[in-house]
Image 1 (cartoon, each protein chain N blue to C red):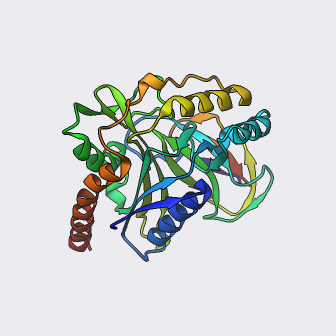
Image 2: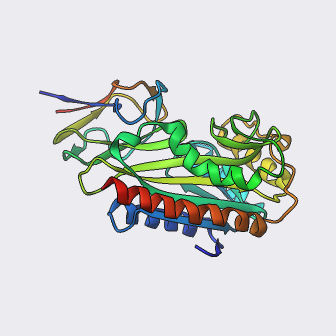
Length: 235
Length: 77
């Protein structure tokens, strides 16, 4: 992987993630990585899409320049757009390795944490007031730098191994004021309590997303090599 | 005899409860053993729940409800 891919439509990015997950689930690949960006939009879990007020809220959001796509996984609403970089890792988990959630999140957060380590104090944990909060955000100086989530599916070979899609949304140089306002507005109109605060997220990195992506790429290449050698040893 | 569809006990080590994020079949639908019937989420990790038997599914826990490992979320008879 040498480039950051751009998708004008977030739906196309989600389709590409699904394609990579299917590759690994079908046994056609053991490791895939993609750094990508998408046009300005909001991505909401399907559970919010079921709420009675959602359809009208999504229409109103699109009219304000924030079209809404639904994703199959849970969690909260996240933004996409300028200044936001995404990292998608797809890999195999052998049966006995597949139960330790902290370990599988470390696979995803390690390259981001390493790339950010010279910018301040990096940790992993929840950040109150951040969008789609969870226990495995990458946190820079107390503010959310990256949010994470995963999707696991059984490999089709009957081995009991899993294919994992791990996704991180990295806030490189995002002007998040509008994004937070758009998320809170969509929540309120859909009937969900809004509570996203701009100051829970990084104020911006001293580099653009292409530069931050370039810092992650060597770690991904190393991970790819390590991962393939570990798999070669385990079969 | 009915077969319970339960939250798997072997997908994660922690004691965290799972949220049912989606049912992919309707209540009363015919399902086949091994068919993907529901998605659950724990710690923002989405897992799949497969039908353990052939038959008619009766959903007992709805989408967005929370359930612990081993809890019955549907029955197949």
